[in-house]
Length: 132
Image (cartoon, rainbow, N blue to C red):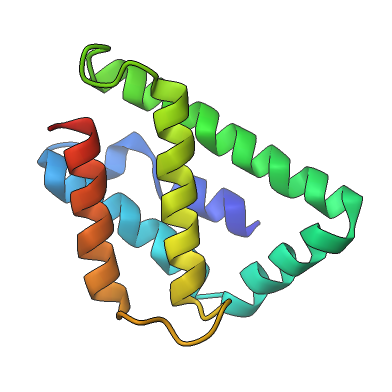
């Protein structure tokens, strides 16, 4: 349910008429809101995925779908001469975003920066990666 809510929050209608930077920032905010509103859920899910093969398979399926969706998006909006490997780029961006969100949720202790600073930095990182 939490995953579906997040995906629904990323529908194209949410971004119509927004500038590129604003769109990326809003997308990062949706991800952070998802994780930070339920820090124990994401932590439990991560912990369970390390112990239970069925939960690990479910987590992997979420990751695969997320990376596939990002790959399609990157392929549609960024020329290949800028991002020669959209799938690898999607994988790295997804991993960076998720690790940042999990860190902010306190999965590995108190984060060194607050959510707003991390959101701005991640937004800048994604924008510079896709639109140098």
